[in-house]
Length: 464
Image 1 (cartoon, helix red, strand yellow):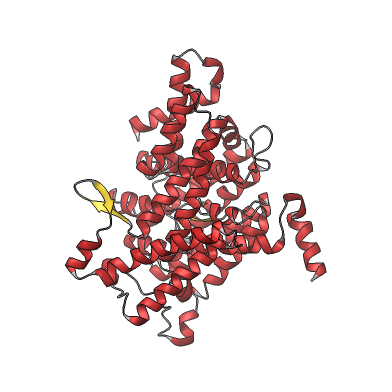
Image 2: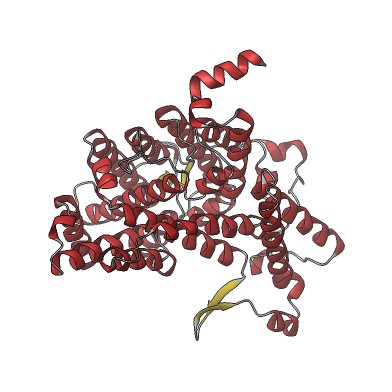
């Protein structure tokens, strides 16, 4: 055991980062638990293009394993990677369903995007963009991600729902009771709210692993409610069973083959204008989602140095770039750094051991997919909501006495949940920061790179 501990110390520099193996492993488990939903959601989205659902599940888990291990090895950071939400929907419903391209062509665009990212990472372009973002705006990105994560959690648990009149609204318990669907739609909302309070109490009591315990507690409550009839699953209404599907016996744990997706890339339209448009769309969203996640999570974890830069960021960006291209080869949309990494960081994760733990669980999930796919959205929602609170506290570090700093921060924060995009939040923040400071006579605060980014963002809204 002592030799193992010494090996972990040598590889991950635990003492140097003020952490322990136990803390890192718990953090890695927590990160995985908050990300496990992607194993169920990504196959559902990607299969809409005609891709084999079982193959997508295996490819999703493999992409999570490979990408997260790259992060652990290349950067020794606790960040996890997997096929990104939003990007997978863009892949399936915009590029394939709406624009009419094949999923093979879309995978080719993702692969090329990853190659471009590798070049940008090697030439320090992405690192320069990270470092060019002003200090206050970095804190705003962290706070905005907090609201974004909370909004995802509230939506996944149906605490907040779509409303034609007001766009969104709170779930109506009265409406569910009237419609006779409370056991299907109302019970998950109640369980999610209980989970939030339970997790918050554990946090106040400073219980180690409080977020992970919150997920497990809420999941177990869901199982008990399902067994007692208080919760009635109905897949057509988005309410799934909390019990693992083991109907096929031992065969249930056999990995699904990825052969229908492996190396199925179509480069026949590589030099067409439409291919370039698709490529640039993937490129923009991924680069700024990744930078936003790294800015926000690392700021919250106090990983930035005295110059507000992230040490070894090149390794983190390179891991993201390599994972994107490898993911495309095995059959998934853009693999990117996950904002849910904040859940593990909030549990004390500081090194690649956290990422390694998460990666191993992704690999294990290939063989235990019935179990991991049974974790309901209402059980992970409390974790996202509480992590959102932890991230949002970065707002206290913003200088609100200086409007030239505070107003762009405000736009960055509100854009993330309202536009449902970290990238758009960064875009809004950078554009307003540059314009406000240039017009009001504070040109010295705006770097040349910030000016270039502002022009690029504005052109993006006009042309794409």
